[in-house]
Image 1: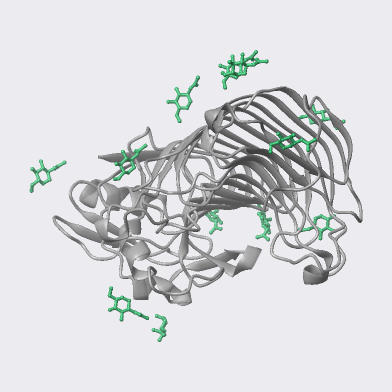
Image 2 (image 1 turned 180 degrees about the horizontal axis):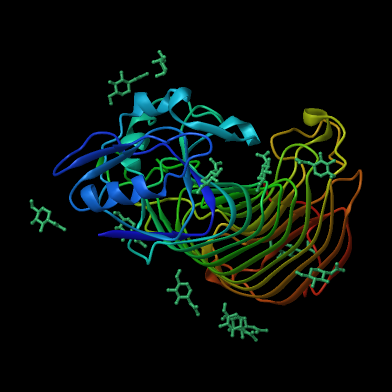
Length: 405
Ligand SMILES: *[C@@H]1O[C@H](CO)[C@@H](O)[C@H](O)[C@H]1NC(C)=O
Ligand SMILES: *[C@@H]1O[C@H](CO)[C@@H](O)[C@H](O)[C@H]1NC(C)=O
Ligand SMILES: *[C@@H]1O[C@H](CO)[C@@H](O)[C@H](O)[C@H]1NC(C)=O
Ligand SMILES: *[C@@H]1O[C@H](CO)[C@@H](O)[C@H](O)[C@H]1NC(C)=O
Ligand SMILES: *[C@@H]1O[C@H](CO)[C@@H](O)[C@H](O)[C@H]1NC(C)=O
Ligand SMILES: *[C@@H]1O[C@H](CO)[C@@H](O)[C@H](O)[C@H]1NC(C)=O
Ligand SMILES: *[C@@H]1O[C@H](CO)[C@@H](O)[C@H](O)[C@H]1NC(C)=O
Ligand SMILES: *[C@@H]1O[C@H](CO)[C@@H](O)[C@H](O)[C@H]1NC(C)=O
Ligand SMILES: *[C@@H]1O[C@H](CO)[C@@H](O)[C@H](O)[C@H]1NC(C)=O
Ligand SMILES: *[C@@H]1O[C@H](CO)[C@@H](O)[C@H](O)[C@H]1NC(C)=O
Ligand SMILES: *[C@@H]1O[C@H](CO)[C@@H](O)[C@H](O)[C@H]1NC(C)=O
Ligand SMILES: *[C@H]1O[C@@H](CO)[C@H](O)[C@@H](O)[C@@H]1NC(C)=O
């Protein structure tokens, strides 16, 4: 059974639920500007919320008071072709023109799914469908839950099963708390065992948002567990488990500013090879070369990652200022400074523990390691790459000038 309740005054933009499978079917269409949709949504939930299907037609629902949603409706069978048609999803997220299924916007609300409700993304159908197709940003695969233009919103104990694409996105928002979030993109089709069938299933992408807290997250995915993108400031992430994927990413195209990100109690867990072969990075920072995007004026500063436990992570800590480019291109001018990594334990899957490849154009400055004790396989000597770093504190052994690759 799926429950969630919503309090406060906000607009719910929903595109969801086709095809009734059993029981009653209700369809709710937004009444339109100036009207209140709360009564009709509650009526549909009481009529069709058990063993039924509620279809929210495209549009904005004006929910003006606290309500309880009791839903079994998440069991719709997605028609991939239908959802790929951009007319059937929202394009509110400006990063790379992504599509969204549910968009929540507004202020002073709380959505509590009590760990039983949320979104069934039916990802397997999508992953299989895209297994032999090109996957591009903005190709229409929907973000499961999008918060856009939110002020003071709380999402609590929410579950998103089998996200086809990004699980969450928060954009253009401030003072948002996510407390309790589960996302699980796990391939179960034996045909694709041992491959990463689930790329782009990021736990969350944050964009142009201030004061977002991510608390108590459990993410299984084949891509970035958290992707902190352009103009995210004052981010707090605490008690985050990332199962498989690429780890925690900082980086974006454009002229991004990322500042004051504090993360603690992070766990990166490698899954069995047949389920998900990637557990690529612990925390990584990427920027693009100057030539690709023109002159970059952004900076990443004051990022802390504390109490990080790694389980066979390929490269625990990486800064790459040539992501997607090649060495003949203009170096990136994105500046990294004041990065602190405290109390890192556990194991790496290679001896490349630290790989800081900073741009010769601007250098990285003030990188501090404290109680940074990640062990290499077979206890081999760790390999530390540090290029163009000014002010590196706390590294026990001298740097190796270049990587081994
Ligand atoms: C929402 O409903 C209220 C009445 O409860 C109305 O005053 C308001 O204009 C409606 N808002 C929108 C955006 O339709
Ligand atoms: C849903 O239907 C199934 C079988 O038709 C029944 O066993 C079950 O009790 C129903 N659940 C609810 C919540 O009504
Ligand atoms: C997409 O959906 C719109 C609106 O339902 C429809 O008019 C259009 O023909 C669809 N496009 C395709 C390629 O199916
Ligand atoms: C992809 O695979 C499906 C069957 O799994 C097949 O029907 C389809 O033609 C293939 N598409 C391409 C572009 O190869
Ligand atoms: C964001 O929401 C506020 C109300 O909370 C509204 O006034 C504003 O127009 C919205 N901005 C956009 C870009 O939709
Ligand atoms: C994720 O889904 C897979 C496949 O359905 C399941 O085996 C696994 O237990 C799930 N993980 C979590 C944390 O729910
Ligand atoms: C950490 O988050 C998980 C959910 O992902 C939760 O089960 C656990 O209780 C949390 N731990 C603490 C110390 O709050
Ligand atoms: C980030 O903010 C800066 C300064 O306000 C602005 O110049 C830049 O365009 C913004 N970048 C993005 C990606 O929003
Ligand atoms: C760095 O960020 C933390 C919050 O994570 C904040 O308390 C501290 O004041 C910031 N330091 C600077 C120099 O801005
Ligand atoms: C270091 O982090 C681990 C979790 O990864 C935690 O159990 C331990 O208490 C932390 N140590 C200190 C000194 O904070
Ligand atoms: C580093 O971790 C290893 C394995 O957990 C442990 O044996 C060693 O004592 C630790 N070293 C320090 C300096 O804490
Ligand atoms: C860095 O690499 C390790 C393992 O590859 C070596 O054991 C170190 O000797 C080397 N250190 C330097 C300063 O080059």
